[in-house]
Length: 148
Image 1 (cartoon, rainbow, N blue to C red):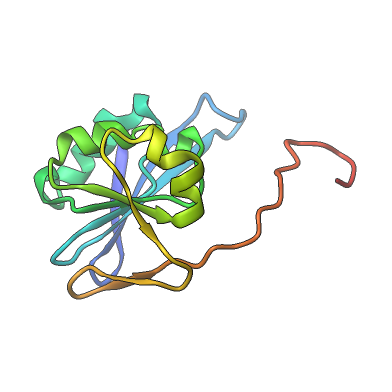
Image 2: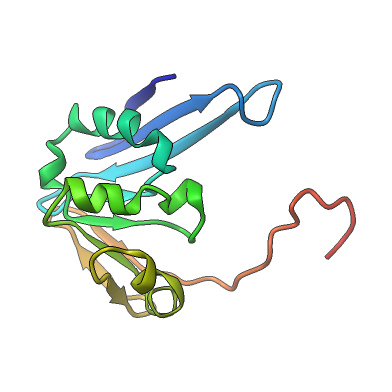
């Protein structure tokens, strides 16, 4: 396995790792996104086992120590499993997440306190900006053939 890097927009990189053993026969690709700026943000941390591959790919773009912000779409292993490994590798990094998500999960899971953002709050990365837009949660169907 390897993690490939592609700049998909100016200063925005996709780090993709294809795992052939997941979801046969074609496998599954896990993606993380690095938004470069004065305060770089990594969106999706990946699974803990993939940290060596993803962090090596990240280091081809920026030194890990420059990572300032870590975020993800929801709390599951593929999106935040390696969160604490990233926090250990980047001493200035902090998780940024929704207020409710911080209260319910992230404040307990992260080795350092996260920064909670209010609905529609903007985080300026220095050259790029991101905004928190919380969406209603719909439980995944988990492969169920019938309606919820």
